[in-house]
Amino acid sequence: MLVASGVCWTASSVGSTAAFAQASSGVSISVAVLGDLTLIRERHLHFGTLIANSGEHTVTRDSDSAGFMRIVGDWNKQVLISLSHRPTELIHTQIPTAVVPLNLDVHYTPRGQGGPGAIDACHDYQVMTGVSAVTRLRCLPTDTAIGNNRAMSLLFFSGTVTVGNVPPGTYSATITVTVEYD
Amino acid sequence: MNRIAAVAVALAVMAIPGLAQAQSSASQGVDVTANVIAALTLTSVGEVAFGDVPPGSATVGLDAGAGFTASGEPSAEISVNRPETLNLVHDSDPLATDLVFTANFQGHSEDNHEAASPVADGGMVSLNGSGNFFFWLGGSLVVPVDATAGSYAGEYTVSVEYN
Image 1 (cartoon, rainbow over the protein chains, first blue to last red):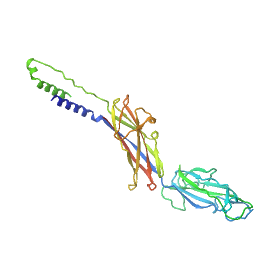
Image 2 (image 1 turned 180 degrees about the vertical axis):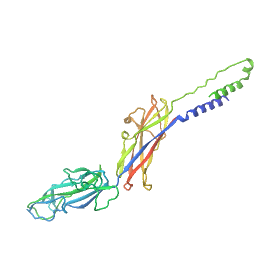
Image 3 (image 1 turned 135 degrees about the vertical axis):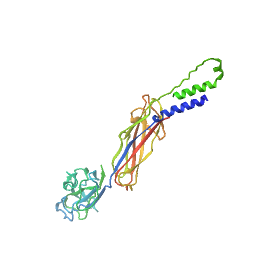
Image 4 (image 1 turned 30 degrees about the vertical axis):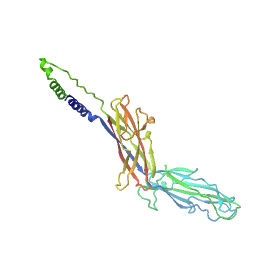
């Protein structure tokens, strides 16, 4: 009987503290998933047909022959643009020793000023001097639908070649562009 | 408590009737003790915010995540219950597939996350001499390439209990 009484007392003791014998707490876990980041090549950079020994030929950024890419992603997100390299010459496709010097220019649209649709976000170009640049996607195109909360940055390739006494043929270089959310 | 003491005395009298008859009065003391320990609390601070994440994998380290502090009786052993994973739900698209957060949950008796070691669900730890134990929560998730863009969230709940 005493033992039974003791057990009963012990049970009572545990019950009186049960409300404080455990505790719990929570924290928020959150993530914002970004939409696809797409790089669309609209045009290659073409200098066209040139004559040997004709000297310098320039394609400007606003020319229809300039290379042109669209970077499309979520509005106002920062992206890193990286070039594989900056070629300084075009190489004959069949004679590797024959080259045409190239002075490459690369421009991109920076973050611009003002709110969505600010015109300078699509037309206020900035020079990329190295092989990478960081910008924000703030250009809202008027000529194509890219979806809600989406925007883009534009990338242009232009430059000057100097044609000397070189063999006829096709001269080329390839630049690989990579973009990623920064 | 008074009711229990009375019952114990009455039972003692019934158990030794011979002693009661031999004396005109008798008394016996009974000790009633209670070992009161400090209430156990668990407080949290911070959150695990992955921020903007493109498809792929993302990780939040212990130093950038959330923290928990269990407080109670010094040196007491406590058990810890927590989920290994947590589904994060899209805030506006009920058809979006949940993202799975995998927790990196570690603890230490001192407030030093660099010395922490993993604490499993159901694991036991001992509060330090001041009655505290510290936990840190980081983790990782994988965002599939076809994941619906937008905000996902969930609440990660940890429970502790005296053993």
